Image 1 (tube, rainbow, N blue to C red):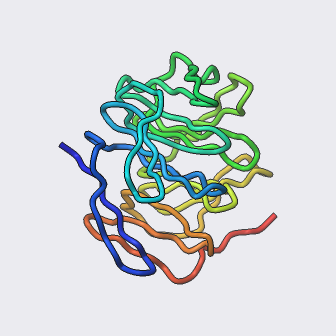
Image 2: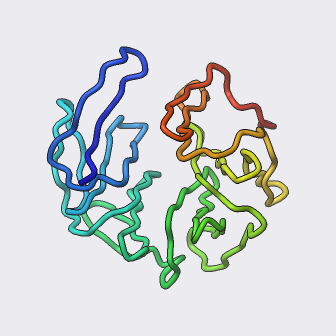
Length: 204
């Protein structure tokens, strides 16, 4: 059974979060500084004491993402949104198998299916593909700019060209996140690595 732990980058403190069976998805509401966790028994949030409290979602959650509302993918690879206590299918990709998804600052949703990258504008069903890339991880920075880790490097989405621009040659990332300073934190094999400089890209 998979558990959940935390590691504070500033204080170096660690701990175990109890009460979430097979924790698979973790996401953060940056505005409220609230952590949500998905597991075999549904959706949870961590209170100020790092104690898990269950929300009214009963599903086997494999992946979570937060932007304005909670998006989640279940074990059947179906995508849903959870908003004001209501679960509804993500109409833009209904009937499409999803592994992971992110939403950027322009409300483009990027999603993975068998390590292939696709893009759809929320509110539409016009799915575009970035099929030449084999993807290991997708994420956004603190400003919701999308980053895509592939087998030949790290890319950022260029909304003016509707294309991915390469920003680093780093490969084999299992996961990638950014802190508030824009510094990347990533997992390679079994190592957690934090870079002290932001990833450079062309600002808007």
